[in-house]
Image (cartoon, rainbow, N blue to C red):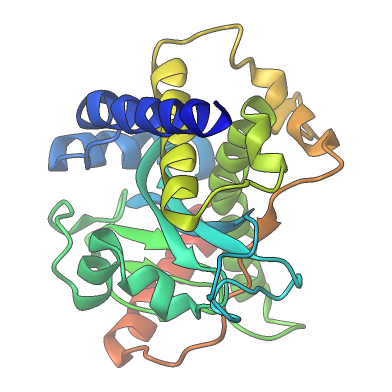
Length: 284
Protein backbone atom coordinates (compact mmCIF):
# COMPACT_ATOMS: atom_id res chain seq x y z
CA UNK A 1 0.00 0.00 0.00
CA UNK A 2 2.82 2.39 0.88
CA UNK A 3 4.39 1.70 -2.51
CA UNK A 4 1.13 2.71 -4.18
CA UNK A 5 1.04 5.98 -2.26
CA UNK A 6 4.59 6.76 -3.29
CA UNK A 7 3.77 6.01 -6.91
CA UNK A 8 0.81 8.42 -6.74
CA UNK A 9 3.00 11.14 -5.21
CA UNK A 10 5.65 10.83 -7.91
CA UNK A 11 3.06 10.79 -10.69
CA UNK A 12 1.37 13.85 -9.18
CA UNK A 13 4.67 15.72 -9.01
CA UNK A 14 5.33 14.78 -12.63
CA UNK A 15 1.90 16.06 -13.64
CA UNK A 16 2.33 19.34 -11.73
CA UNK A 17 5.64 20.00 -13.47
CA UNK A 18 4.32 18.96 -16.86
CA UNK A 19 1.24 21.20 -16.67
CA UNK A 20 2.70 24.27 -14.98
CA UNK A 21 6.29 24.47 -16.22
CA UNK A 22 5.42 25.80 -19.67
CA UNK A 23 3.44 28.70 -18.17
CA UNK A 24 5.26 29.44 -14.93
CA UNK A 25 8.88 28.40 -15.51
CA UNK A 26 9.57 28.69 -19.22
CA UNK A 27 12.77 30.57 -20.13
CA UNK A 28 12.15 34.34 -20.28
CA UNK A 29 12.17 35.90 -23.73
CA UNK A 30 14.24 38.98 -24.55
CA UNK A 31 11.45 41.40 -23.69
CA UNK A 32 10.89 39.70 -20.34
CA UNK A 33 14.62 39.72 -19.60
CA UNK A 34 14.76 43.47 -20.21
CA UNK A 35 11.87 43.94 -17.78
CA UNK A 36 13.70 41.83 -15.20
CA UNK A 37 16.86 43.93 -15.64
CA UNK A 38 14.89 47.18 -15.28
CA UNK A 39 13.32 45.97 -12.03
CA UNK A 40 16.70 44.90 -10.66
CA UNK A 41 18.20 48.28 -11.56
CA UNK A 42 15.49 50.09 -9.60
CA UNK A 43 15.97 47.80 -6.59
CA UNK A 44 19.75 47.41 -6.56
CA UNK A 45 21.37 50.03 -8.79
CA UNK A 46 22.93 47.24 -10.90
CA UNK A 47 22.34 47.95 -14.62
CA UNK A 48 21.78 45.13 -17.15
CA UNK A 49 21.55 42.64 -14.28
CA UNK A 50 19.47 39.54 -15.07
CA UNK A 51 19.84 37.64 -11.80
CA UNK A 52 22.26 35.59 -9.72
CA UNK A 53 23.14 31.93 -10.11
CA UNK A 54 23.20 29.94 -6.90
CA UNK A 55 22.76 26.38 -5.74
CA UNK A 56 21.51 24.50 -2.68
CA UNK A 57 21.91 20.95 -1.50
CA UNK A 58 18.70 18.93 -1.16
CA UNK A 59 19.36 16.01 1.16
CA UNK A 60 18.42 12.51 0.07
CA UNK A 61 18.97 9.02 1.42
CA UNK A 62 22.09 7.30 0.19
CA UNK A 63 21.27 5.86 -3.25
CA UNK A 64 22.08 2.20 -3.73
CA UNK A 65 25.42 1.41 -5.30
CA UNK A 66 26.24 5.11 -5.78
CA UNK A 67 29.44 5.17 -3.75
CA UNK A 68 30.46 8.78 -3.05
CA UNK A 69 28.76 10.31 -6.11
CA UNK A 70 26.07 12.05 -4.04
CA UNK A 71 28.26 12.57 -0.95
CA UNK A 72 28.82 16.28 -0.26
CA UNK A 73 31.06 18.49 1.85
CA UNK A 74 28.51 18.38 4.71
CA UNK A 75 29.02 14.62 4.84
CA UNK A 76 25.45 13.97 3.74
CA UNK A 77 24.01 12.68 0.48
CA UNK A 78 22.33 15.21 -1.77
CA UNK A 79 21.27 16.43 -5.16
CA UNK A 80 21.93 20.04 -6.13
CA UNK A 81 19.20 22.55 -6.97
CA UNK A 82 20.72 25.36 -9.05
CA UNK A 83 18.65 28.33 -10.13
CA UNK A 84 18.31 32.00 -10.97
CA UNK A 85 15.40 34.28 -10.06
CA UNK A 86 13.96 37.70 -10.86
CA UNK A 87 13.63 40.70 -8.56
CA UNK A 88 10.34 39.34 -7.18
CA UNK A 89 11.82 36.00 -6.05
CA UNK A 90 10.28 34.10 -8.97
CA UNK A 91 12.63 31.49 -10.41
CA UNK A 92 13.58 32.12 -14.04
CA UNK A 93 15.81 29.09 -14.60
CA UNK A 94 16.16 25.92 -12.58
CA UNK A 95 18.14 22.71 -12.80
CA UNK A 96 17.98 19.90 -10.25
CA UNK A 97 19.59 16.53 -9.98
CA UNK A 98 23.29 17.23 -10.12
CA UNK A 99 25.39 14.99 -7.91
CA UNK A 100 26.16 16.44 -4.49
CA UNK A 101 29.85 15.72 -5.04
CA UNK A 102 30.13 17.53 -8.38
CA UNK A 103 32.22 20.63 -8.97
CA UNK A 104 30.65 23.93 -9.95
CA UNK A 105 31.53 23.45 -13.60
CA UNK A 106 29.87 20.06 -13.64
CA UNK A 107 26.65 21.37 -12.09
CA UNK A 108 26.35 24.49 -14.20
CA UNK A 109 27.53 23.06 -17.51
CA UNK A 110 25.27 19.99 -17.35
CA UNK A 111 22.16 22.17 -17.61
CA UNK A 112 20.92 23.66 -20.88
CA UNK A 113 20.98 27.13 -19.30
CA UNK A 114 24.50 26.70 -17.95
CA UNK A 115 25.97 25.33 -21.16
CA UNK A 116 24.63 28.26 -23.15
CA UNK A 117 25.74 30.78 -20.53
CA UNK A 118 29.26 29.38 -20.43
CA UNK A 119 29.71 29.08 -24.19
CA UNK A 120 28.16 32.48 -24.97
CA UNK A 121 25.07 31.24 -26.83
CA UNK A 122 22.45 32.06 -24.18
CA UNK A 123 19.72 34.32 -25.56
CA UNK A 124 20.01 37.66 -23.77
CA UNK A 125 19.11 41.21 -24.85
CA UNK A 126 21.58 43.00 -27.10
CA UNK A 127 24.26 45.09 -25.41
CA UNK A 128 23.05 48.53 -24.40
CA UNK A 129 24.61 51.70 -23.00
CA UNK A 130 25.01 51.89 -19.25
CA UNK A 131 22.50 54.45 -17.93
CA UNK A 132 23.56 58.03 -18.60
CA UNK A 133 26.70 56.99 -20.50
CA UNK A 134 27.85 56.05 -23.99
CA UNK A 135 29.50 52.87 -22.63
CA UNK A 136 28.06 49.81 -24.36
CA UNK A 137 27.68 46.89 -21.97
CA UNK A 138 26.24 43.36 -22.09
CA UNK A 139 23.46 41.94 -19.96
CA UNK A 140 24.78 39.52 -17.37
CA UNK A 141 24.15 37.12 -14.50
CA UNK A 142 26.21 37.06 -11.31
CA UNK A 143 27.94 34.11 -9.69
CA UNK A 144 30.23 33.82 -6.69
CA UNK A 145 34.02 33.73 -6.91
CA UNK A 146 34.10 30.07 -7.89
CA UNK A 147 32.46 30.70 -11.25
CA UNK A 148 34.36 31.89 -14.34
CA UNK A 149 34.26 35.54 -15.31
CA UNK A 150 32.66 35.86 -18.75
CA UNK A 151 30.86 38.42 -20.85
CA UNK A 152 27.46 37.42 -19.49
CA UNK A 153 28.64 36.20 -16.10
CA UNK A 154 30.11 38.58 -13.52
CA UNK A 155 31.75 37.63 -10.24
CA UNK A 156 33.27 39.60 -7.33
CA UNK A 157 36.84 40.84 -7.18
CA UNK A 158 38.95 38.37 -5.19
CA UNK A 159 40.88 39.13 -2.02
CA UNK A 160 40.53 41.22 1.13
CA UNK A 161 41.37 44.83 1.96
CA UNK A 162 40.38 45.86 -1.54
CA UNK A 163 40.43 49.45 -2.83
CA UNK A 164 37.22 51.34 -2.11
CA UNK A 165 35.84 51.06 -5.64
CA UNK A 166 36.34 47.29 -5.80
CA UNK A 167 34.93 46.83 -2.30
CA UNK A 168 31.87 48.85 -3.30
CA UNK A 169 31.47 46.73 -6.41
CA UNK A 170 31.57 43.54 -4.33
CA UNK A 171 29.07 44.93 -1.84
CA UNK A 172 26.62 45.81 -4.60
CA UNK A 173 27.00 42.37 -6.17
CA UNK A 174 26.29 40.85 -2.78
CA UNK A 175 23.17 43.01 -2.39
CA UNK A 176 21.99 41.92 -5.82
CA UNK A 177 22.76 38.24 -5.20
CA UNK A 178 20.66 38.17 -2.03
CA UNK A 179 17.52 37.89 -4.17
CA UNK A 180 18.28 34.29 -5.10
CA UNK A 181 19.16 33.55 -1.48
CA UNK A 182 15.75 34.88 -0.49
CA UNK A 183 14.02 32.92 -3.24
CA UNK A 184 15.54 29.70 -1.91
CA UNK A 185 14.67 30.72 1.65
CA UNK A 186 11.02 31.36 0.80
CA UNK A 187 10.82 28.09 -1.14
CA UNK A 188 12.17 26.01 1.73
CA UNK A 189 10.10 27.89 4.31
CA UNK A 190 6.89 27.03 2.47
CA UNK A 191 7.77 23.52 1.29
CA UNK A 192 8.95 21.78 4.43
CA UNK A 193 9.92 18.60 2.60
CA UNK A 194 13.05 20.46 1.49
CA UNK A 195 14.19 20.63 5.12
CA UNK A 196 14.02 16.86 5.48
CA UNK A 197 16.00 13.98 4.06
CA UNK A 198 13.94 12.93 1.05
CA UNK A 199 13.49 9.16 1.12
CA UNK A 200 13.45 8.57 -2.61
CA UNK A 201 15.88 7.64 -5.35
CA UNK A 202 17.51 10.66 -7.03
CA UNK A 203 15.16 10.54 -10.06
CA UNK A 204 12.06 10.72 -7.83
CA UNK A 205 13.63 13.29 -5.52
CA UNK A 206 14.13 15.45 -8.64
CA UNK A 207 10.39 15.22 -9.34
CA UNK A 208 9.49 16.35 -5.83
CA UNK A 209 11.86 19.32 -5.92
CA UNK A 210 10.76 20.46 -9.38
CA UNK A 211 7.12 20.33 -8.27
CA UNK A 212 7.85 22.59 -5.29
CA UNK A 213 9.72 25.08 -7.49
CA UNK A 214 7.00 25.42 -10.12
CA UNK A 215 4.29 25.63 -7.42
CA UNK A 216 6.36 28.39 -5.77
CA UNK A 217 6.35 30.34 -9.04
CA UNK A 218 2.62 29.74 -9.52
CA UNK A 219 1.77 31.07 -6.06
CA UNK A 220 4.18 34.01 -6.28
CA UNK A 221 2.78 35.08 -9.65
CA UNK A 222 -0.76 34.71 -8.30
CA UNK A 223 0.22 37.10 -5.48
CA UNK A 224 -1.09 34.61 -2.93
CA UNK A 225 -0.90 36.44 0.40
CA UNK A 226 -1.14 33.16 2.28
CA UNK A 227 2.07 32.06 0.58
CA UNK A 228 4.19 35.21 0.58
CA UNK A 229 4.29 38.54 2.38
CA UNK A 230 7.13 41.05 2.30
CA UNK A 231 8.14 40.19 5.87
CA UNK A 232 9.14 36.70 4.73
CA UNK A 233 12.01 38.10 2.62
CA UNK A 234 14.79 40.57 3.48
CA UNK A 235 13.39 44.10 3.27
CA UNK A 236 14.04 47.69 4.30
CA UNK A 237 12.19 49.83 6.81
CA UNK A 238 13.43 53.37 6.33
CA UNK A 239 17.21 53.05 6.31
CA UNK A 240 17.18 49.83 8.31
CA UNK A 241 17.70 46.44 6.67
CA UNK A 242 15.45 43.77 8.18
CA UNK A 243 16.14 40.07 7.77
CA UNK A 244 13.33 38.01 6.30
CA UNK A 245 11.47 35.59 8.54
CA UNK A 246 12.75 32.64 6.54
CA UNK A 247 16.16 33.24 8.16
CA UNK A 248 14.70 32.17 11.51
CA UNK A 249 14.73 28.59 10.24
CA UNK A 250 17.01 26.37 12.27
CA UNK A 251 17.78 24.11 9.31
CA UNK A 252 18.32 26.37 6.33
CA UNK A 253 19.27 24.74 3.04
CA UNK A 254 23.00 24.09 2.76
CA UNK A 255 24.68 26.31 0.21
CA UNK A 256 26.45 24.75 -2.69
CA UNK A 257 30.21 24.93 -2.13
CA UNK A 258 31.66 25.20 -5.61
CA UNK A 259 35.31 24.60 -6.37
CA UNK A 260 37.34 27.40 -7.85
CA UNK A 261 37.76 27.58 -11.60
CA UNK A 262 39.98 29.77 -13.74
CA UNK A 263 38.30 29.76 -17.14
CA UNK A 264 37.98 33.53 -17.35
CA UNK A 265 38.74 35.73 -20.33
CA UNK A 266 40.57 39.03 -20.80
CA UNK A 267 37.53 40.74 -22.29
CA UNK A 268 35.49 39.79 -19.22
CA UNK A 269 38.08 41.35 -16.88
CA UNK A 270 37.84 44.57 -18.88
CA UNK A 271 34.04 44.50 -18.68
CA UNK A 272 34.14 44.04 -14.91
CA UNK A 273 36.40 47.09 -14.65
CA UNK A 274 33.90 49.13 -16.70
CA UNK A 275 31.03 48.04 -14.49
CA UNK A 276 33.05 48.74 -11.37
CA UNK A 277 33.80 52.28 -12.56
CA UNK A 278 30.14 52.89 -13.37
CA UNK A 279 28.95 51.65 -9.98
CA UNK A 280 31.63 53.63 -8.19
CA UNK A 281 30.34 56.91 -9.61
CA UNK A 282 26.64 56.15 -10.17
CA UNK A 283 25.54 53.79 -7.37
CA UNK A 284 22.08 54.47 -5.93
